[in-house]
Structure formats: C-alpha cells, structure tokens
Length: 233
DNA sequence: AAGTAAAACAACCGCAAGGGG
DNA sequence: TCCCCTTGCGGTTGTTTTACT
Image (cartoon, rainbow, N blue to C red; front, side, top):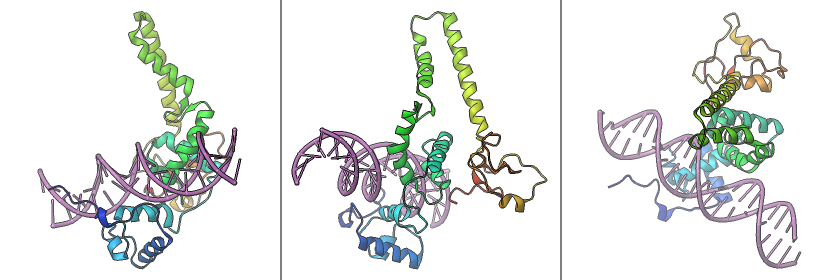
C-alpha cells in the first residue's frame, strides 16, 4: 500500500491544453476561486490532473500575467536576483510582477545563460569564467608536484579572492532575514511606503554610485516594506 | 520548397515541505 | 509523534516554431 497517485492516469488528458479546457478552468476558478487542486479537475469537468491544472493556471491563464518579451531592465534584474538566490526561480519570480518561475527559468536557460557566457561570465557562479577556472584549478592542483610553500601561497591567494567576492556580496545586502535590515528610527512608514526605488536600491545596492532615486530610505531591501517579505507581490 | 538544426516554449515528473488528523 | 495528503518547486523532457542551407 503506497500513497495514492495524484490522479487517475488512465482517465486524464496529457499534453497541450485546448482552448475549451482553458475556458473550463478559467470559468471554474473565476466562480470558485483557487482551491483544492486535487478535486478541482473533477469539479470543473476537466480530464486533467490537479497538478496540470495548477500549472496551467499559474503559468498561462492567470489574469495578472505579463506576456511578451523581457525588457533589458528585467534581464539585468534577473541576473542580479539569480546571483543572490541561485536557481530559486519562485523567489526570483516574486520580484518580477507578472512573470512566472517557469517563464523566468526558460528565459534564463535559453537567453541569459548565453548572454553571460558571451560576456565571459560563468552563469552558475556569476564570476568571470577565467577567474573561476583558475581558482578551481588552484584548489584541485594541490595534489600535484607543488611545494608546501607554493601550496600555502596559493591557498592565501584563493582566500583573498573569496574574501573579495564576499565583500562584493555584502554590498548586495544579503541579510535574508524576515525582518528588514537596519532602519533609521526617524523615518515614517508613510514616507517610506510612497518612495519609488531605483533599480539599484531595489536590489539592496544601497551605496551604489549609479543610484538615481536619491531617496532617504535605502533599506527597503528587495521591496520589503513594513517588516513583511512579500514574495508574491 | 523541402529538409534539418537550433531555439523557444509548454508541460510533466519526482521530490520535499508543511499542515492536519 | 507519526503518517498521509496536498501543494509548490526545480529539473527535465517533449513539442512547436524559426532560421538556415
């Protein structure tokens, strides 16, 4: 006795959704809201698995989705967020209104990866490919015919590179606590909530010289307002 | 115009987390 | 506390579209 399958595979459709199925799903969710995905297909008269319905709704049918090409600013934002979060597509999607994790993931794999590679940047580490290669080889090479003194020298060099990288990360404000980072006590919430962030401040690059918003509050890390991390804003 | 390769997009699958009984 | 169920996530695969020869 294992757990029951998520759906009766013999009686469910697979593959591309038809217009009719889309209409059924939209109509049902508009009437009843998003609820139990497991029971939804039957209730909506769909021969689909609940997971499939959920995916279809979230990725393509939701009314708040933004279709169309990614802008250059969205590109850069995705790159910065990926540097912070890694392959946490849902977290990244949470900072890009109207975009889904699946959409971003596909876009990353088909466009941005290549774009970074063309820039000589390793997409997985966000470091210069040469730099990453030499750092890695320095680590792996330690078994070769290298003197103890040389090993120490290389280790120190590696350490320095890592410290430098960490400093760069710190500039991004990686404090991922639920509460926002340090805030000036004198600021009022009203004032903060109406401030529009520039691209750099929205990423937590609070001291970036490219900052153009010149606002007083530079602590609304990734759009966190009023002490709440709104991942699906 | 036809065939092929590459790119882009859509959907599925398996797993893990969290909640409730 | 444990077990089961549901949901959500990330990786992967399959299909369609576009570009090129």
